[in-house]
Structure formats: C-alpha cells, structure tokens
Length: 183
Image (cartoon, rainbow, N blue to C red; front, side):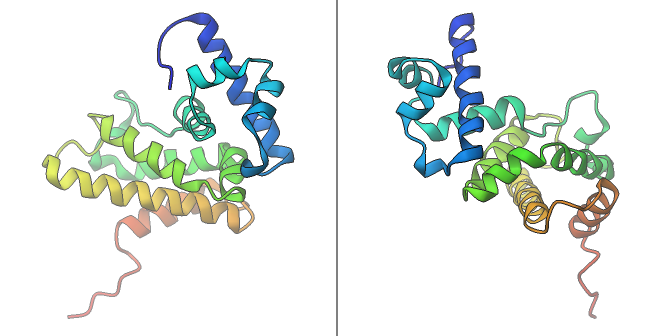
C-alpha cells in the first residue's frame, strides 16, 4: 500500500477510498469489482494496483486514516491510570463512526477494525506503557478485541446506546465488575 507523499497519489488514494464507501452503500464488498471501484473513483486499474494492490487494503487505509481510534500523547486516554477516559473516548468514537462500523459489520469485515486498532495501540508508545513488552502484547490484544466486540454489538443491537452507557459498560467489563468474587 502506498505511503509516500506524492500529492497526486494521495488524492487518488482518497478518491478510491471514498468510492469504495459509496459502493458499499449499494453492494456487498464481494460484489464490488476492482473495475467497479476504479470506474467510480475515476482512476485507472494501474493506479489502483500501484496504490493499494487489493480491495482489502482500501478498507485498511480508510480505517487507519479516517476511522481509527488512537489516543494522543496529550490526551489523558494514553495512560493506563486514566482508563475511564479511554473508555469515554472510545465510546464517543463508535457513536461517531457508526456508519463505517455498520458497513464493516454488514460485510463481515469487522476483523479489519480489530487489526487496525491493535496495530495502532501497539504503535502508540503512550498507551499502556507502564508494563513489560511481553505483558503489553496480551493487554493490548485483550483491549482491542473487547473494543472490536463492543463496536460490533453496538451495531448489531441497533446502534442506539448513548456514550454514557457504552463508557460505563466498557469500564465495568474491563474492570471485571461482572465477575462474581467467589472465595
């Protein structure tokens, strides 16, 4: 997938990504051909293949560039001690990105959201930084998996829950509130 700085290539990537989202409104992902996508984006097949290679890479590009929840250094959500803020940020994210998450769920591609979230959180040196690298891999995987499941089920249940409900649910789930303490 192209990651350079050529303005023409970057514009073409954007056009292809937007075209795929428009086509997903009408057809399933499997029904969209590369030719359909190129025609909608008004780019050549050569441009498509040199920028993305596959339709799946277009989804990954869109998620990474426009739909990825990533804590920032200045944000309180980056530090494990501020996990409630992280839960609130992600809750706002899934409500705001309901449309694209819905397209992913409808096309059985929600796993792409997990892949992008996991990679992004692992690359964020401020997120869960106070543990060993060995532990961090498992912690970030657990969090990304949970985030993905919550986003998916938010859509499957009609996407009507508000940010406050989702935040409380996330914080309670990750905090183990729903597990009984048997001794």
